[in-house]
Image (cartoon, rainbow, N blue to C red):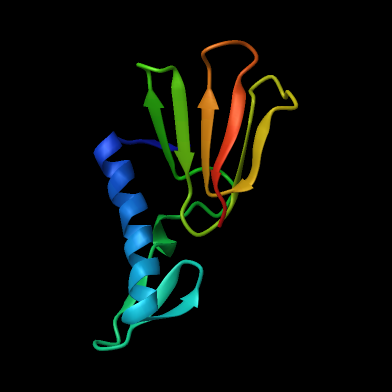
Length: 113
């Protein structure tokens, strides 16, 4: 089951991913798409422990003001599909937006692993 998080927490996790990629260019040696080793300290930086390994999102944010749902899983791709088993889905992605304003629900890929 995905955790319910605040916008601030979601942005913090997303920002950490950006920091890992930014640091990888100047101070961090990438080990894989999710972790690197700081070249000056030898410290491992990883988001791996946050990731769900069962192809489900680790984080879900319900943005009720716009009737959107955002889902994120660091490091490993996940799938998200309509409860009714419809054709609309996010498949093998890192970040998904569900738009529930009008039926049927629309799914948007907001980022790949």
